[in-house]
Image 1 (cartoon, one colour):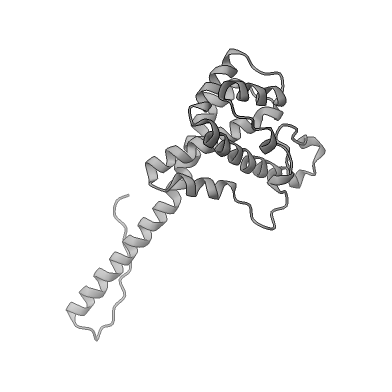
Image 2: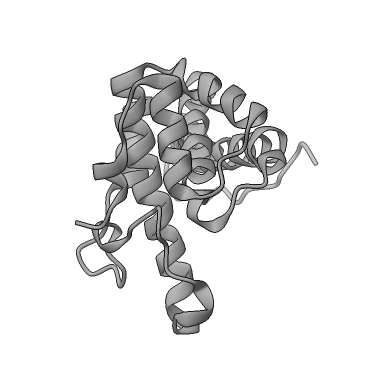
Amino acid sequence: MDDTVLPAFYNEKDAADVRAKNLAAGLQNFDANLAANAIRQANPTVFNLFVQFIQEKQMDPLKLKRDQSWLSMGVSNFLAAKYTSVVTGVEKNRMLAELTSEPNLFPVSARSIDLVKPVDEASMKAQLVPYYTVSMQRKATAVVAVWVDQAGEAGIPRTLTALRAKMPADGAALVKTIQEATGADLSKYLSAN
């Protein structure tokens, strides 16, 4: 549907040119609000599509275990922020800051999570599982950002190639594989603080 009927309110005492001016201003305001709303919705939509694509095409085939899942979360979020930035013009670093910042009263702190030894969801209260997952994603994204700062973005495909050649047995072995492939030791960033 391309056409929408909008109400146009006017004061009967106003002259025709004043009515036309007010109508034009109202339409400009409507267009500006519509554009702002589209921009607010476009960024998360594009980001989510990139995350889904990266996970389905690159990360899911690796069949990472729970103690390795941080890599999928972090790489997907990091790369999605990068590609979304290209499409929407929102700065990658701004998106990464939003993805990694934590509200003061968030029920599960990202700092309390050991990504290589995550708590089993079955042992948690059901209400805390989504909060724990969000905090894992925050911390994983922050770790991948640090990793890229240390090893360069080329570290991601080098690591994925190494994983496809030989899948590590557990989370600790994954950290070792990353270190061997890229020279970056991420252990201190992955552990609980």
